[in-house]
Length: 425
Image (cartoon, rainbow, N blue to C red):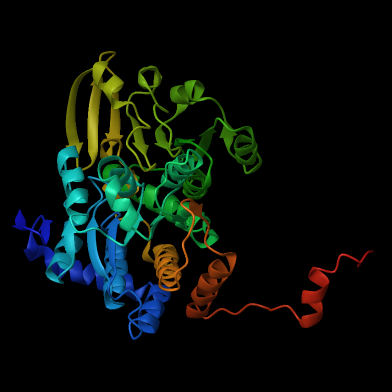
């Protein structure tokens, strides 16, 4: 494993040329981020600032990292999941002079070692997907927080935990909830997760989806996206939920709704998308059909209780890449994809570049905003901050423009009417 202390640690630098091809392909489909790079590379707004990121090392992330660097930032990076790093991309970034510590298949010690190396020199800004970097700073290196201007968080689970931390008065610096921008959650989470989750399932199993009972735990934005795509492939979609309104939406959108205890007995393919632990447990595995496929598309690997599955299994083997066969004591076989890690990244390539274009544009603009506040001498409250709605519309507008699409705009009279509370019937 190539290792130059203080600079990078990646799997194999010789893989950099292929990683460059992957990043060029992604960049060709990320016009919004390209336009931001072209606009701000001349101004160099991030010059003199260090951005430390803990986010899946994909080809799209490579484009984001190089965009920050092109706009003046010093960048240090680690992966936010042990099984989501693309080693080719990591090598490309290392060869390009980016400080990066990431490789596929890290153990827990290596995962946190990599995060710690990115903060050996205190960052000015942090960028997270799952908040592991933020939590690491708060738990192990809280003295660094006083020097950090702010940060951003990419995913639902991370935002939920950061809001809880802020509510308890424990958040030590402001964090933008990038996940909560409409151009992120209503596109990345729905269309990105929907397509990439099915991509991961098919790469790891090559099964036919049509006609299968496809069980999805959770009907939030991610679960809804998976349901849309599974239904489009001819699967019979079943939803399990703990939230009544979400269950009602699923039912009215043509899905069957039932508890996991019932779904476990009839499902052929299971996907968890909740952010909650122990969604599928030992008793569920016992009642599943022989040959059932089980996977997770949530950020953390806690949704499937694989320890309980191991306890009731007599044998396990890797039957193909990212597909582990468990032979249970009752003789039935269960197939767990990507060892319960998020299947769309561990077994596939993550979201399509066109979707990540908007998500990463939000990341870029969030950090640009933090820098602008800092340069103006403004101090933000230590809380979780929403991105302005106007920014959402600007990013969506750029995306439409790059697609050759135009929309209407309100006339002056319509703008007045929109807020005219004296107008009646």
